[in-house]
Image (cartoon, rainbow, N blue to C red; front, top):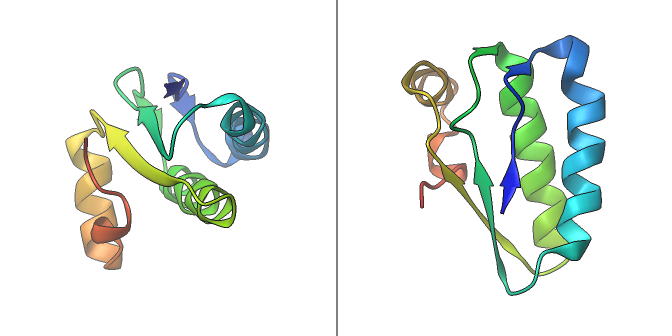
Length: 89
């Protein structure tokens, strides 16, 4: 399981994505779980990170599920019409 940090704004986005992609290669199986329970401070960059991570995962034949996505971020994903791209575990 990969874990998102407490803060995920545009400032941390690049580093967080790099960390997730590095962790992706070490994750066994065909499904990768991303734990968002620690996420407290975020902006729309968090969605961009998750979508890019999803794209990288799919390129390796892996499916992504997101655990404990904060309600506000799920609402934002719904507003953008991308909630279905970030399935919950």
